[in-house]
Length: 301
Length: 96
Image (tube, chains in turn yellow, cyan):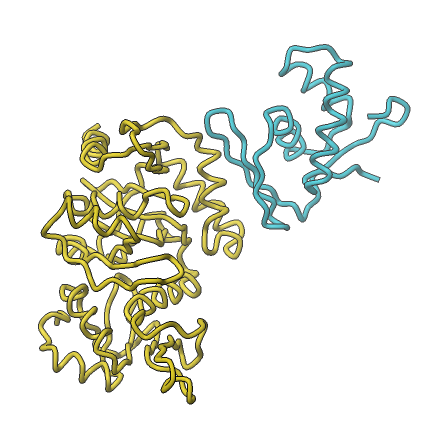
């Protein structure tokens, strides 16, 4: 059953009863919340996702107001994982964004049966594009544009590498857009479905982009790594791919991984296998249309 | 490197290094510490030689001189720095 097959009322009831189990790639998350913001966000962005039967859940999460008198004075919300809260409370209107960050935290902090790199992953014709990127480099904007131009999204934030075969595993979850990117994507892709923005977060204004139906439907299909590309948005820059040292790419991805050190030798071997399989590039761009074209040419090469 | 007391070097067993090279750039993983390092080509040459078996400084300098097509004095001077770096990274240690 898909989440979108529930009525708004049914979804709210299930969330309030701690009876909603959402499948995102290999993970099942039991969600508990009585906040309409959470229900509305899920309905808008996760309608194509499957619901789990609840027999086993990887993560049990809750989003709701913290206890105490403060909740009456200044409305806030918090995120709980297995009954404890890893974050400080946030303003109440950040509820959906907090759920998204919390779900990222659940995966990044616990899924150590994968090597987890801080990178976006997309796929075309069976070949995966891995895009690490420093904050502000334009990674999420480019990821959104490529997904909305036909690439299949595996992940916006966390590249999961299967320890058994070195293939990339999809999550298919919404893309986190920040600040000017929100308008940029809406302007270039008027049909894109974007959730309600959360203003004044620690990342500025944040809004999430609904993944394409193809990305969700094929989330279980693993992808073979082919390219590692480091994007960089620069005003006025021509879209251009240039070679990037694989040793440098190895060190960058290792240094920015969620659990490279934790996995020890296995982390080294998995990341090395990724570099063995990939051609590495830097990519500078300013216009999204040119960027999409450059990646279409890369995929066709 | 001291000419009066040439030493034999080895890879400490706990280092258990792993190696990859891409386009002549060498990356090594220290299995004991869990650290990853990119080494220069000469340092990689010396470490790869030590990963095969312990070797004395004369042997290492000769390998370096051959690979770099340089004289033994130049290779010997470079070896001092390389071994110091490998020792600092705990990839190499002198045998007692």
